[in-house]
Amino acid sequence: MPQLELNPNFTDPDAFYAALTDLHRECSEEESERINARLILLLANHIGDQQVLEEALAIAGTASPDRQTGK
Image 1 (cartoon, helix red, strand yellow):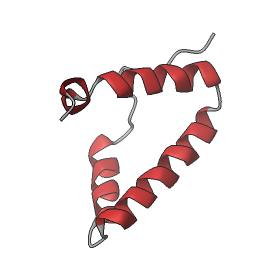
Image 2 (spheres, rainbow, N blue to C red; image 1 turned 180 degrees about the vertical axis):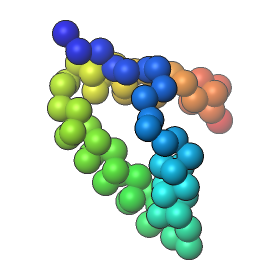
Image 3 (cartoon, one colour; image 1 turned 45 degrees about the vertical axis):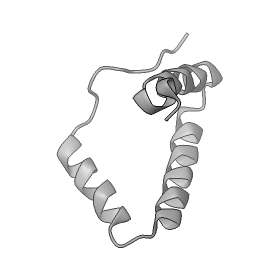
């Protein structure tokens, strides 16, 4: 059964980060949220495995200090 890859797996993390921040540059908050939503759905489709996606959701949902404190 596939598991979510949690070890660094980027070929060039700095290039990805630069491209991601460049994509959001000069976007409104609403445009950035739409970009993020589309990116999430594209990557989720690429992953495809429901168990892996649920694992990612569970990790993402508990990793935020704001979410844990309700702020």
